Length: 99
Image (cartoon, rainbow, N blue to C red; front, side):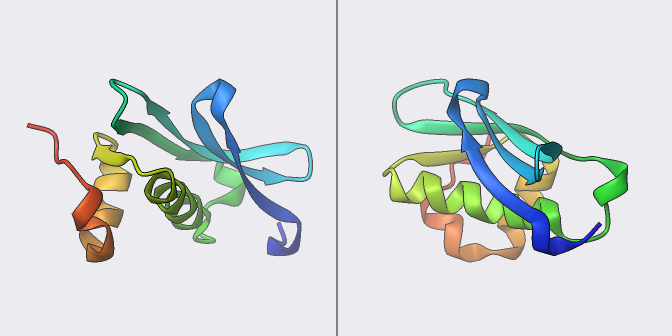
């Protein structure tokens, strides 16, 4: 795997932000929309063939930046997204932690 062919795209019809290697889906972070204000991240996954390259962190960063740009708030139900936010306090201002 080379990082040169990797792209990150929002696929709103599938409720996820994707990691793509050409036409191949290499991973994603999935969300649901519980209301008009929140984007609830529920699952992040990277194919084993692409693991260990930091791709999950990159797709989460893209997703959270997009949520911020759209004026929405984050709910991190996904353990990976929750851990990522804890390491990046710049997203605290738009994060609503699950009860």
